[in-house]
Length: 99
Length: 135
Length: 110
Image (cartoon, rainbow over all chains, first blue to last red; front, side, top):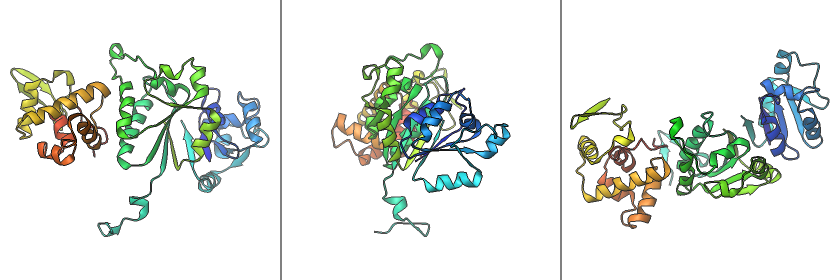
């Protein structure tokens, strides 16, 4: 399953809930303000690192770059462009866009 | 019997297959329109005879709290409508244990019977859905 | 839109549904029924009263399928059929009966 999060972890608990409710082997894609969750030193860094042990975490490169956060990405987080976003949706059996 | 609509044959996808739909509610009832809109979508979905589950997480649990009185804020109290879901054959209501406990609530505080799942059980249930829609 | 009855003005939406549910009374029902060309019998009133109770309990107007099932449970299986309800309200039990009962249009009524 693919989980998509577009809210900053310092503003909302969306990423928190998503990480709590995403099972082993699932994928989490951070987009829009969600990409702040993929950066070093952010409030959710510990939880992202924990999640990386048994699931994949992706961040949308254009959103990272737009926010000037492209050099602060947590190790292990994979970067995708829009084409990669489409591939992720296509290769998972279902997806949830968290609000 | 083959049904046709305007020359287009209705394939199995359109007529027979039942999909698993999950609606995830994460917002408190009156601060935003999400809760009410979500409930309306759920009621409409009942017309399509699909396998529907409703999940309440985080502040979404506040939608189900007993004793809501909205007269003074001049907004419709839609909490009784959750009790109508049974009549719409929507009987799979789940609440996350962690969210419930974090709000000092128990199932006795809720206006409808629900099944309480841990976040791990909830994760498993989400994974097996065909469609997951968030409100 | 609006209509006048016994010197009082009642607001309705563009499809003729009463805006303010609390303004409903039996005279309003009779007026709305006449507009729909429905002659109100005891059987009609039974359904109208059922709908008002349902709305009072659940704050929504039921979908036809739900209404049929619930009527069958409450008033007996011979009345819990869409045939029976359509005979009473030819343009749709939910749509027409709800309008006469002063309820909003049922959610999910397409």
